[in-house]
Image 1 (cartoon, one colour):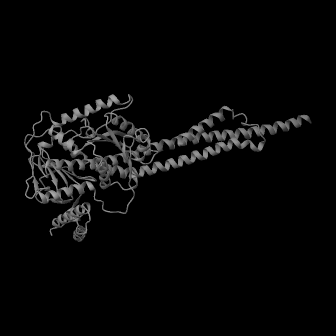
Image 2 (cartoon, rainbow over the protein chains, first blue to last red):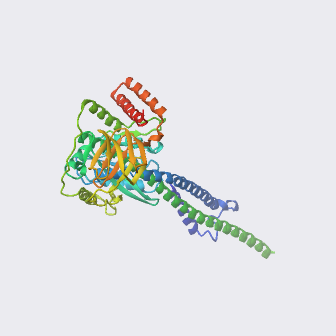
Image 3 (spheres, rainbow over the protein chains, first blue to last red):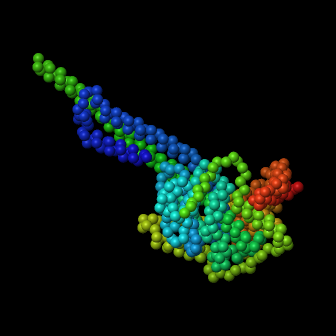
Length: 310
Length: 230
């Protein structure tokens, strides 16, 4: 939206400059209509000024929400660590059924993070033949819905409208686990800093796969004594808990990345709008001064012609 | 192909019981009543030729190789969660003097790398104490009290709704609870009311889900009551 306006304004600037505004008005029209090109520039200045105000406000809103989101995200990172230590980070195990879960935002104007997630999800989904997708977030649904609709199992949207709690993340985890895939690969943006986000792939298996991995020694589960129900039930509960924790962390990381990316892109928009407004103001002043000068010249040359006649 | 779309609508604040934990508790309740007097199964130490972390590196490397063969040339490889973890120090030969405790809930880090003398966890099979040098154990916790002994005088008690605890070979203990509150913050009146409510709900339960939900409520409120000393 904003870029199209800038393109049209740049085109307008080019035509006005090329038609040699500095020496004469664009069209030879009666004096009352000399302000037509001025009006166009004025309108453009007004709309660019509005864009600048809106993007500046959006940036401030994103900045004010970023601190709170970042604190909650950092607190959610703790629980991921012992589960990785226990269940491993093993993205390379080949299974029959794989599900890819791209995590994206619901609202736009947040830079390129959603496109990044979609690109990585497409590659991960192309690694194995029988892959399905459960899409989280409206933006990924818009991008993935068209080409890959045969792979998409379901979509989860409007998560930004309710407070993100572990209960919500468990509901999302339940929906994903209910499809019964053996391997789940969750693609999201991990928040590094306000300007840097790492596309990350987290892998969660079904409890059957964890049992196989334990027997193969890929996870150290069998080296521990168990105080709990028997192993398959224990691993089932642990796998479900792991999915809930990974989803909670992924959703928080992605929403914090969304806020940081929106801050960045709105900052760029505001800067561009300010530059554009500066250029338009100069052009407006030059146009105005040139047309006044031309009018004066006309009057004076007309007056001196009358004098010379006398 | 049919695809369903789940919309999360804003609801009135209602205590949502995630069905993950309902099914977990339902299985436990059934199992506990059915397997009367069963002993928890223990596993001997396994033998694996490579340490699990080497196998992890292999798995990540094979994933990245597969990724690189499909991706467009301008794309970088993605990260995986273990990229952001600090490497573990080697297991010491002798058990250290103190336990290193990590206590997490999904929305908070209660303790991270804190050295304590002893921890008591409410295991599925009964209360369990963990001291430095404890044999590596994985524990499933029931609703109960986690007792952290910093020193002889300083004992902190937390009520946990359930979760897991891992005691590792290097005397690091990871407690992963779904919800944990200091016992001082439990309100006795609310606990009594909750117990009465859930008992009534169990009587009026129409299907398995409501029954399990009420049973979880009774179990948790009963454990809170016990934690408060009633």
